[in-house]
Picture: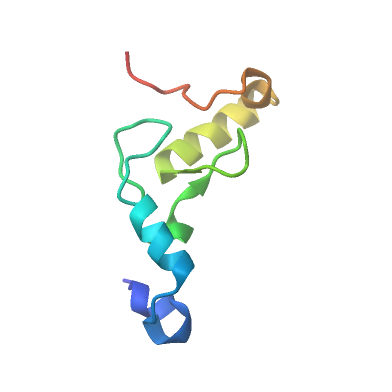
Length: 86
């Protein structure tokens, strides 16, 4: 298992970016609202809708499959909430 202090710069010393991400990672995934974001930013996925929102790994996989099966569908809709529960 890989721990945060093994991959953080400066032997685990906190940086402004990592502290900011730690606060953001406490929120649930903005796409599904169910899964929490992983504290290690690299273990999450970058949403294909706007290329700046981090989503949980399962939502990133779902967006990739949707984009593969229906190219351009995510960009045309402008929405990332395909899997949102009613």
